[in-house]
Image (cartoon, rainbow over all chains, first blue to last red; front, top):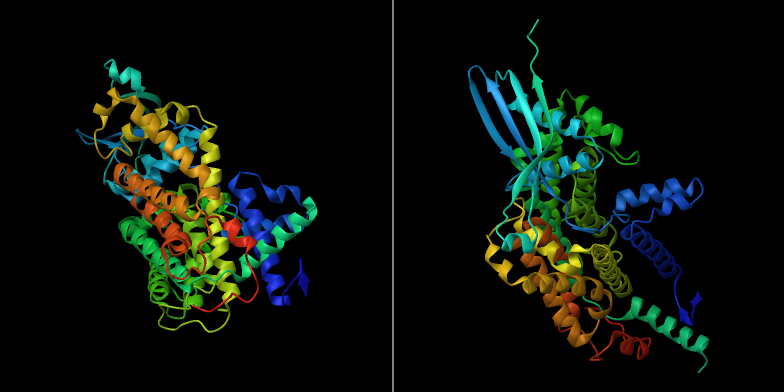
Length: 171
Length: 321
């Protein structure tokens, strides 16, 4: 079989065609263009499924276009007369916390801070025994600009969502 | 020569380079081993929190995850339902899936039944990501891409316990490496393009913010605020290195410098932001795609530009490693 003057076997032609299609999906995915939305059924489903399996439609906009404010969660857990306090996501030192922090950011982006606080509170109730209440406060970490920092400003926290959860008395 | 004829000649040479420019199977072996090690390291780091992240009653319960999961992907709930037929509960199923995943990654690194190992690891990672889709990030995406390439590409023609015999023709190796290279070019071009759309990357504030945020801060670099040009320089360096990558990485001399710069950038991300696994995965991809291209001894020509090489391409220069 000839292509642009080269003799290619059917196998080579097949692989070249598949590789080209794959690269096309990678390009569309990389630049955030949903290729499957331009295709009629059943091709949209096929391409969408293939993209999910191969990772070809992954986006690569890491830390862009701008760096959003980091979110931390301040948690107050009441057990009897004592109050346990913790601040989550401030220093993500392990993979799990990095992932959870990303999840909270994602939920906040879609205005579902209520779900984020519920997840954190449920986790606290699950991990610490005999808790009566869990108060979760989501806060932005405000990083001063370079000029502000030179003029003496430092990082500070700005609460934007707070919720308190109470364990129901067992029946 | 009329432009059409020139375009035709360039296309022919490009096609020839895709199939016949000799490439070493060692590049793909590096991809296989590197991706395997990076994913195994990530699994070790996550091991303590597996049930929190992926368990039936983890941060996002399976019932909820199933609503947002992609229809096409297998998830842990599906695998657990298979195990439940043997009387195994959901949490134990999660541990079994991750044990299989770890074992298949080790087999992949050693090159033992490579395609099968890669396929098993790939399915396990897909299931884990589908279950924890909302908290998945860059490493997971590159893990899926890397394992998919390990399934379809001849990644075990060397440095393997059971070397692959089928599908290791030189053209298959060349085409595979070329596509890993082109994929990386798309990654960096897209990443650079999206950064360029933000104002913070032009003023240096992006780099300052990243290094000051408690989430990523490893060292206190506040004293550098008196030299804002450092942050402007670092931001512009990132923009330049990423957007220029698809063009410059192919050049023989400049490409070497670009390769070193991109490795340094990822090393910097690891050291100053603490994103070790992500950086390791990106370094692995870069090394497997371009290390031998620039520093290996198997290159046959010394043309300064790839397009110069394409123009001089002739059939029959192909050879096995």
